[in-house]
Image (cartoon, rainbow, N blue to C red):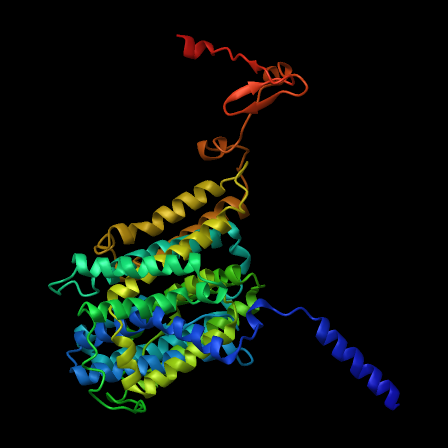
Length: 502
């Protein structure tokens, strides 16, 4: 009996050993894990502190209260990131996704605040809308079959393109009201940082190349300090340690109108997070099925529902960090978990947060150009795998990317539309995702009425050689540098067509 037990145990061990390891499950050394994790924090830091800054200012909060909002957002974002990457049963995609306050709801939250509801109504609407979102995640997790490469490639490309204005704004200084916004000094600092990224990627070894973003930010900050463009004077001001106080701004209030508008934001968040999960799955080259999407969305919604307890807002995956995964090639989810732990510590130690906040915005902008461009390049690589012959995939890509660029090219395009419509389509990512999904269903799932080469977009993708042309060729003929060469190496003269002769 003991022999049988040992044999069964050995077989089990062998089967576990032979089970292929997912790319995202790879573990690095502790030092490398936290170094790459800190790089993720630096990449998304500007994005995670911007929403509380905007919402707090709209609510007329003091700088101290806005500081509490920022600390809370860092703390909750870290916990949400750990939940998403490490995962527990039913919650967490176990993919390298950084979580933080979603930009999708900023304009809606500002409207709620300015409508008289105050920050308490924002928190109440986030709680209820997120719980509703949690209930409907099974529906969203079933849409994986509607995300073939023609859709995912379009969405990934759009994610990168829609983030470019963020990088440009950072490179110009980040604050449009500042006197030096768009100055040569700011843009020069961004250019220098970008140059360091490219230089380290080329001349460094593998480790330096992968850390090029982090090292470039450090070097860029040093350059800024020498040039008098970095201010560390406020690092020592304020508390060193502070735990987020639950409901520090009072108990949440629940208003129907605010909840309905926030529910639209949640639907947008679910759409964007689904796209981000699929995008990072493509980059990591791992299997992403409906169950995994569902686990990721549930983690999003649970984090969002709990975040108001600690004075934070809706949580979502950060698209810019998807670009960092692509550019570094570091696919381990535990690296991002380390980044989540760093965010938690930053939320508990405001002094460390102030150190990171001292990194000049143009430095972030210079690194962001490469990062966000990498996201777009990853999407283009996915689109290169798509078959474009005898179908309508080209028009799907063209219309979806064009539609997604509208709110980027003209931010006020949807201002006169109903608020629910503008909330959804004001995001270029959700615009492109909705259009790509609908067109893919229309052309590739409902094929009734489709025919070969049914539009100029399809006809242009085929190369047709007539039978008469083939008959003129001999064995050994070849085409080189625009000339037809025969088997003996002699050029065969080409007769101009009748159209070109006249």
